[in-house]
Length: 87
Image 1: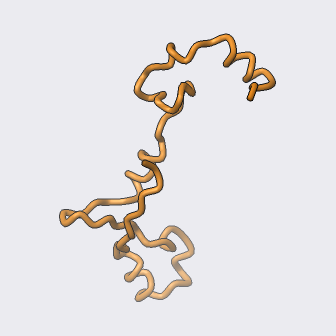
Image 2 (image 1 turned 90 degrees about the vertical axis):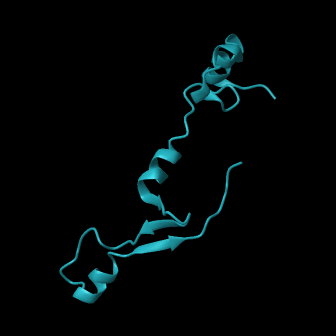
């Protein structure tokens, strides 16, 4: 199936051999990085026993109308189920 448009003309004149860097390993697509790993590294923590935990939502703003018990419980970490979507 041919690729149409300006992207198609770009891909027809370049070879995929020049995109052999490790950060562009997704089938010759230039500048394809796995930035989702950086984002998930900021949001999830692996504990010493191997569990994955995350912060609870709802503790960023509008805290005046939430009672003390609710905000105290929001400090705790929540255990997360491990699922793999990419292989």
